[in-house]
Image (cartoon, rainbow, N blue to C red; front, side):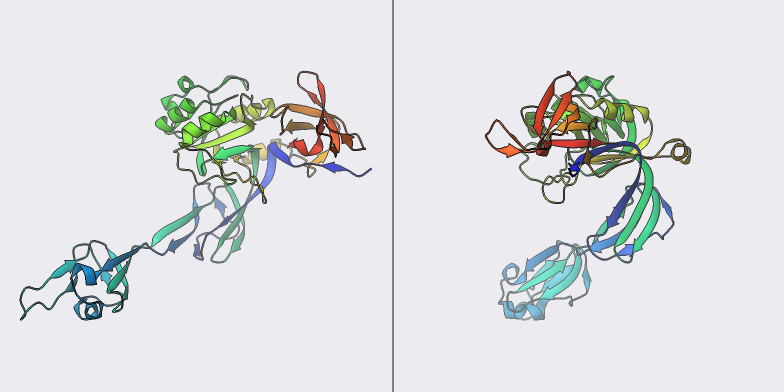
Length: 375
């Protein structure tokens, strides 16, 4: 019989992790191959074109569009400042001249005698790409970015919101089963990656934003709490661009779900260590999971054996998470892998596996309804 495979989330004490950091448009790479970079260090930068600001001089100065060219005091490519005269009419017998002073600063991009408009291009918008991963530059992609590699502790979540953030790990919950409430968030957690246990409540996230926390990590969240945090129902398949003031990573799923004990213990063991967190999640093609990346020191690399990952192969004894009802979010171990498809409650046939839950109960689950917990 062939091997069985399933997607998995990584929760490992040590893994060699690679990170590709690329600019959205060509620019300048600021580091070289072999350089050591810190997570918050800028490794590449470029400038996006500034905003366009149209000025309808024909309307503002009550003249035909064809006369605008004669009245504009600046040429294409010249710079103009706020309050500086942009155009002036000829007036009547040299008197009663009208002057239009620019309300925007920028560069004159176009002057049209057809529309009577002048287009001002605003200041170029700087775009910087940070390393995100503390490590070594292994490849430089000219004018685009870099590849960075490092040995890290690595935790993938199942869902997140918010982009990249950085901070030291601080525990708020005493156990992996303790819910994260607002009164557990304290002012000394400013700039920290706050670790809860089970469900995180919306008021706890609000409190984390108030104190200036970098990120919140918890086992579960209710969809109504998520709606209160965002102010709307999240109906897209890609997250990471939300501007809520904190990055949120959910490690297990929606509902009253405790964080996996091994995940909680890994994070607890790294209290006080610096971490990079990304809440970006994509659940369709090109799956992307939220993550917590914790760099290892040279001493830790020597002391910790790297995890041996097998590409998601299902075997008896392997830990899995159930990702469909009626056992959604529960953690168990593979107890058996029947070779023949079985008839499900719906009447359809599918390959299944036996999962032994923490309660001791063994349930039969379609293989498509589980994901492996790797590490």
